[in-house]
Amino acid sequence: MPQTRKTVRDALVSVLSNATRGFSVKLAAIAATYAIDPFTIDWSSQSSSLFQGYLTSADVEVGQLAPEAACPVGVLIYTTTSVGMALQKPSTFSGEVGAVVDFYIRFREGIEQDNIESICDAIEDAALEALYDNAAAWPPSITLSANVTVPKEPAELTGDGWQQRIPIILLFEVTV
Image 1: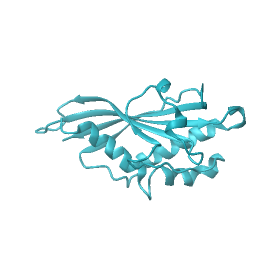
Image 2: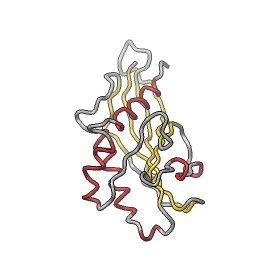
Image 3: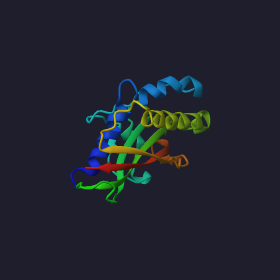
Image 4: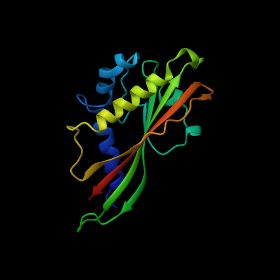
């Protein structure tokens, strides 16, 4: 397949990193509503806060993924499925591609002092607002489905404090 999955991952990074409509802009706009401090994620390819790969929660140390105190969140982006469905003919691939954006939040020791529900809700809302922004620049070969699932996981104690995973599971129609 001609970079079908890579096209989806690249588009996700592009939309979420957009300087005027991306995740960090959306989070800054709603941070006061959730009574949290806004933060900015470095979406560049050299970033230590962004990793493209499929890892389990047990394999992620948020302290390594989000090493800066100013940004307590690390992001994993990966695809999970591709199903050729011949949605459009002729084409090399026409079907659905499943993708996940995992936000991992790092909390200091003693999470009872943190308002962890608010930061989780703010991250989810900011990400969905960026992804579903009417002006989001998705490539013409990709259509983001309205089918989205966000099955937040419980916080876990790790060697570096606490961490929590917020996976945003997306489905795309792709034709290349």
